[in-house]
Image 1 (cartoon, rainbow, N blue to C red):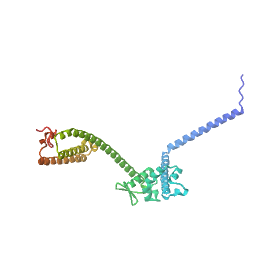
Image 2: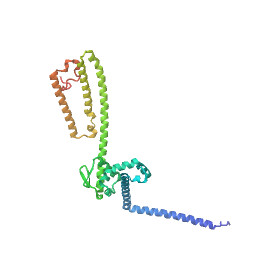
Image 3: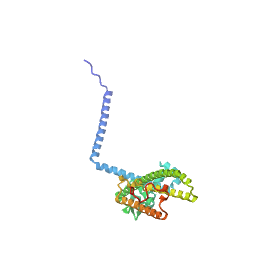
Image 4: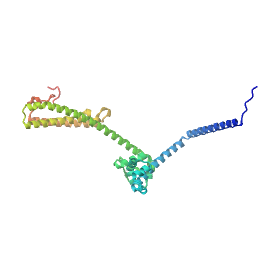
Length: 310
């Protein structure tokens, strides 16, 4: 019969240590589990904690900006023999970032001085944006109230949600205006490109016809006037590009232009048409029809004459 191996005191102690460690790890896991269960069972408390963290962060950001503003305005950084840039670097800021924050918030600091508590709890980025809008006269502060698009909101902590909503609305509106401006710029550049093509084409045509003018032995006065008229035609063709229905972005079908917008456009074209026809009739009565020189007769018939009419 085989002998049982003798268990030493060291082995017993090692076993106890292993058990102790395992028990501690189990206790830790149980504590974590209980903590998670408590957190899930009390979500409102967790949300309250997170909101307080967000509030504290906004508060700290604002106070941080106030300190930077006052240090720069009072030149307190010089007391330690530093320049503004050196002070910013020593505090872990890029001088450009610090200056941008100060410039954005200067209108608010100038108006409220010590009473920055008015803005506690409002997102710091929104406060910076409000400062920018004040600088650009997009919004204003009147008698302790924020005025945006005629709407007045008292600048008190109790109206924090209304203030933030108004700033967000302002951000959305200015963002839309920026997008519209970019679209208009793109459309204008497209029209410019089309105009350049047309002008180039007309210049080539003018150069081609120049030989005809030279061959007819025009007087200097006649040649100068012919060139002037050709330039007027070129300018007119360029203008026509700007009012071409296909070049007006606001009237694109996908933009769903309103009835008023379409009517304004058609009315403007009608006015231009009437003025051109009136001018043509007066000129024709004064100077005669251009058929007197067959080469000058328009290929599409006289203005006002319907296509296909006899």
